[in-house]
Length: 207
Length: 207
DNA sequence: GTCTATACTGAGATAGAC
DNA sequence: GTCTATCTCAGTATAGAC
Image (cartoon, rainbow over all chains, first blue to last red; front, top):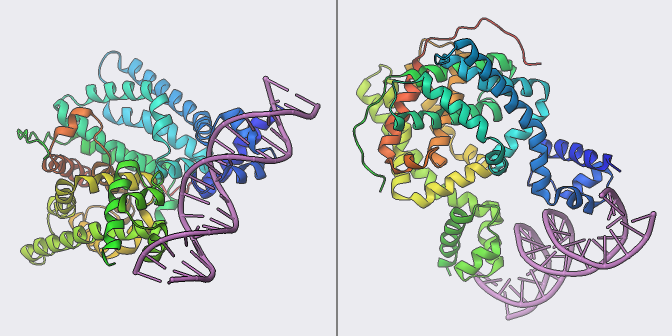
């Protein structure tokens, strides 16, 4: 049956998001999907292959929206650099939109990120998005030299991943909507990115 | 023998940092330590108990240094709030110092963070440090209401964890010393934290 | 092409002898 | 304290039924 594949995906998505990737056995998944154990390996090759397709069907639409939004902003700017806040919003808004409509998937992404199961598949399908947004940010931040720019990018990624994937620091923050979170994050990140270059001439190499 | 425990800890630290927590079996560890499999369960109770003590012997000294440094800054300020940059430095400097002298441990912390194996033991031994630094930051940032303050804290934690635990975004950044990374991170975070309050009156609740 | 039944290897954990 | 033997359960591989 063609629906065997979907039954497996649905069961896996639910169980992974509830208990985490490592803690969910393939035998749990087949019990929920009412299929045979070997069907997973037939359709997906391995547990990791199953996870791969699970992530893909949620992440790909988000990345397409991100690029479409950036395309639109760049068209509006007509050759000039897109404003920093808009670049950040183009990256964050599609993700928060997904988080709003698929909260269980947001939880899953958080768990996967926490379990380090996300990097491999991300590397494979994130390249275009990554390149486009780095270019846009670079144009929006001409006051930084390349070294400082790359580090600030690193800092930004940390904040974004933590905000999109981890439960809020304080319990009361959980009541704030994704729109609010995004607005507060954009305010924070844009101020950090716009800060004057630290301009350290030091070229010391880590021992 | 009393040294059985240490042999296990040393072997585990090396293997965990090389291959990760999940990918390292207890049988790998005992092969490296030249001890019996059951000795791990006798001394540590479980694989997670072993990890717990492994983290502890590295994290506790860092947290003690952090608090000592904050104590010193607060004494110098004599009742006034400690300057934001100094609070951030008191938190980051001991960790980067550890990273400088125990790069393999830094790699291990990164792997553990990526594998989500770090939260449980951290919750248990991080309380005092957390409380002290939140208080100091709150006093350094009187312009933020509680809600925005908590979110910015969340953003800061994401950047810090990512910077301390993940390999740099760009290959060439790996050559920058821990002092440079810390200075750049402090500049970025303090600018973000000092940004005017976004002051959103919206009280929408996430659906 | 799809799916099932079953077996294989290696994991963490444990009981009890020494 | 330490070690042997064993248990249960994981992910994986394969042979063969439809």
